Length: 102
Image (cartoon, rainbow, N blue to C red; front, side, top):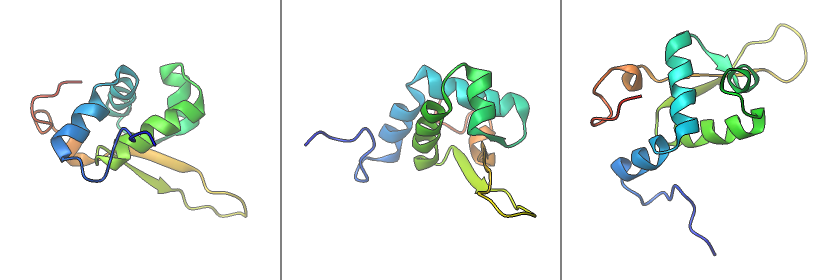
């Protein structure tokens, strides 16, 4: 069995380091910061030049360490709601990530 990149027993600093150590995830965070509004995976994928499924995977890692949040948009009609992602306010503040700079 191989070890997952983010095990529940890992300390937060180690998990943050792993999450922010990937340039794609850092770019996703930068885009969310630049836009300042929630975006769905498709919109993020277009902006970072990756497939939406790849972006969803990266967003899952970022959500696990508390850097982004996901919320289903309200829908007035039947159908699957759009999931939008945004920076967690504490994560957007400079200097809050133990010296990490995006």
